[in-house]
Length: 202
Image (tube, rainbow, N blue to C red; front, top):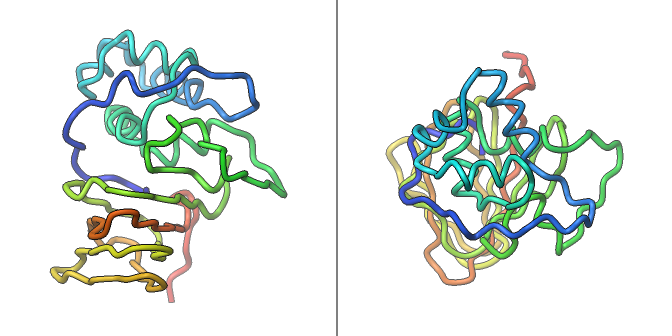
């Protein structure tokens, strides 16, 4: 979430399912609009992200849903974030219910599920299972992590914080951090103030 620093290791192509017409937001249009805004070809994005041109084309045409890892690689290549691409893929709703089986335009069952859709002042993700411990995150605004199940380690400001079920940690904007699950079946909720929100100082 937020501005991601570094690139996840390993491509994750072939895990995306086809769109099924169920009204789930599709991220392809947001990826295509961002790429065209930057005047980049699919080949250029493929070179930056390490993903193939056919796979990127399938995503842009909503014939495949990317995993969060693949979407992060695409976002890095487009100088944006995965959360911003997801937010741009759907319209803003005043009241919006997200059902438990809604993967939010990502590959179902990959351990990451958006809990909000569209452009809002807050965004939220649910992580289950393993996380990409090698990836460092840097957010413009504040973020709250809550451990719903299992245990995780959060590395921030040179310290490692061990969190168990029911624990939470607040990370202020500008703090570089990374985290990983330390128990099988861990479930973490991450809620953050969107990057486009200007937070008054003082």
